[in-house]
Image (cartoon, rainbow, N blue to C red; front, side, top):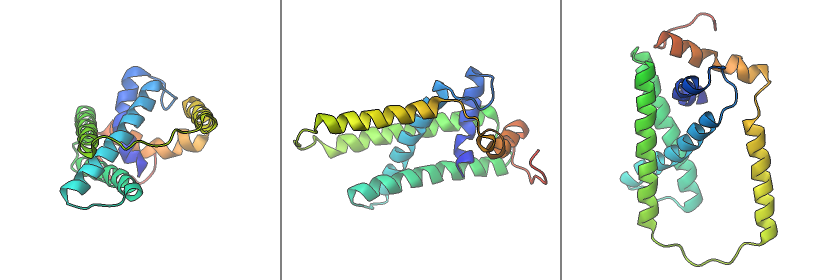
Length: 171
């Protein structure tokens, strides 16, 4: 299902880096923006529906709901034969902007945070080291044939055909 969410990012990436599916800071930033936007979009929809979930479940449900909304819109456009590069990029920009705007509104509605105990330096160092190692692994170019070839065949076909068709074979 993540192939539907990453389809507009493929268009953004091809404009900056012609090498297909290689690691790129632009794609990383697009993914981070998509994560924040999915959280904001999902939490915004949950708040508009009047659902008040406790704090860890609100964020998890918000991200999943945001990704599902975005995925549904992309799939409907692809099934209608409207999956052009410009429309998908515009959709990504619009939903990302709306999601980030919703996230800002949620932060403003929460008010000032309570005073908390300071976090030990060792804990911050461990979290920072783990995050740096994960970021380094994410930025390294993929060498796995599954990631490079098999999982991106369908999004590549949708991008080249500008529509979702019934494909008898992957190529």
